[in-house]
Amino acid sequence: MNNSVSFSKRVKTRVKQWLWQCFSEADGMRDVTVLSGPCRGVRLRIDFRDESAYWLGTYDRRILRLIGEILKPGQIAFDCGAYLGVYAAAMRRRVGPGGTIHVFEASERNFKRVSLLPSRNGWKNVTVHHLAVGEARSTIRFASNLGAASGPVDMPGKDLELGNVQIETVACSGIDELVGERGMPDPDFLKLDLETAECFALKNGAALWARKRPTVLVELHRNRRERPFAFEAAEEFLRDFNYRGTEVHLGRVVKSVDDFLRAEEAGVQCTILATPL
Image 1 (cartoon, rainbow, N blue to C red):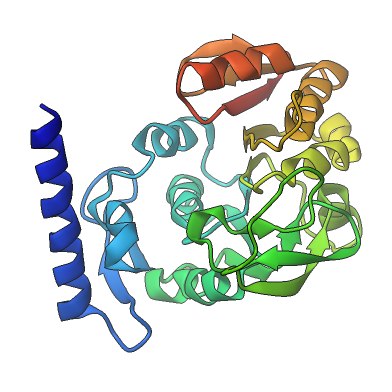
Image 2: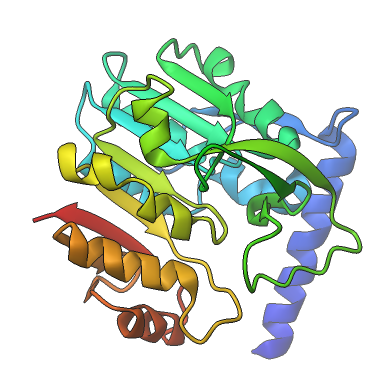
């Protein structure tokens, strides 16, 4: 069985390499149309070597379908930490032309790609911002060449090996800053995938959580602490603002740091759907 799995992986790797060599443009990427799943038909720009799941439509189908179940036509959604924009695409598909999507991506390389999403797909109600989300009113150092794992460098206990990491300096905004100072509308739904900066985003959205009470989908990321900062922030957010948390991969109610740690022990990246009670 192990030999069979290993052979299958080698074949897939060679196919991806062949696709990349044959079809990539000068920057190593290619515009593709998603072949299946909740984002079928959406135009994305990908690197075949490690992003073919986005093209095939197999990436995170469970969560993309969940977004389709939560959002309603005409609503407002934020995709914070967008990478290629596949979550934003699922949001736009659901809210339709009458809704509004704001997309936030800090990595310049990823921003250049995701900023093409509206024009490639004819969406006039999707706005892409070259902006990190996390600490309010700040400028941060950001690791920009780690693909979907690109994120802030100087987080307590993150301990990144920086030898081959490309670092850029980017503006960073808090959640309440986005809607209170930058003039963006109150969202009905937010997705937070911030590579440990969710510990700041959950804390500095207090005014929005109390006023609008949006649904929040947040992927939690560890640092070296026994009780990671992001896990503590999520526990406080659920408790202080009276939200119900469900770990989306396991379908399990979660409330505390211990619950989040147990979810990780079950082999998943702890991702919480927080709905107001």
